[in-house]
Image (cartoon, rainbow, N blue to C red; front, side, top):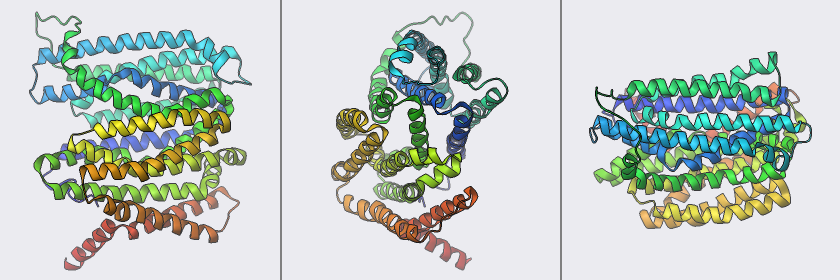
Length: 513
């Protein structure tokens, strides 16, 4: 379907890197989702609320990155392309190591000393002892600091295009982190302290593995050369870093404000259920990461070559591909949320309490999946000004709305805000971007590439849901949900002009052969 994305002469190493990245992302996401109900079963919802709080803290810690992780990735690639000398590159790496270490130490220590305040005055624990919550937060501070340090070495490896190794390593660490901890919970103890102590060991293992491989890739220091820490190597790249930093800041504010506010308002048990629903809803956008990683450099290349037809072909065909999967996934969530949660966890009460949150975030993510595409167009054109303006407006509207809705209506209120603001952005902001960067595209993009697919899937899904039987067995219910999702995919394919053209082309080619 992605015609023109990879021509016959495309670099096979790039294909391998993208495939490895895709498989790793899918594996890490799915293994995290699969293990969630098992954690809740062994640890309880309140203890799992601390796990959700840890994930949220780690995301907020990203704001301290200042764009330095993408910078070291870019500079590693530039060194490999011959744009800098080995000694200049090594000095930059040493300088960034110092910055990362300083931030990790300062942030980790600050969070460590805030643990008592967070345990007593922020987190709403009812069953867990305050000492247990405090110790857990202190362990989180060390884990976050160690995983933060991984950023510089992960950037070196990514910039060196060793993504196959990195994807395999990420999958291995994820397996240990998500599955290996079960040995601790089963044979040692099920308290949050046991859980986070194990995660601290995994974080240390991850850091050591990345350091060893990154240093293996770095050029060797010649005899007599000294690499003392110096701020100067960072100055030339700091402007680029700050541009990326603002985008990161906006992303964190957009995706994590609701989680921060709700961590204060909800009890830890409720927060655990909320986290579970949001993680599952995130699966709606699972296809986006690998697709965007593939099309953004391709679109940039086509724009640089002046191949406007090729650029629009990739943009529109990939939009339809993502629309098919995102609409099918969000429709399945809409009509089978409670069933999916029950099949997944085996807990009917949890499914009832969490289904509405899953629906709201799943629907919002279903819109966001295709709403991200105008950003890819702006990226290819080399002009992100409107993206920054739009993101800033979104954040200004989101933060007070989330605070009010979450305070008044809890997680359900936050879910409605997430859905409504994404819908407003999709309807009113994206046409403005299309008119600015690609006049004449907007109506075709809405009618042919997105709306017709979503309408076909949701209308068909509603009609099918009226006649769907019910099953009292988890296996039977799972089969019904899977069958429903397959039908939704089929509806998306037949409503997509690009998919129909691909099928017709395949049939003609097969007949001619």
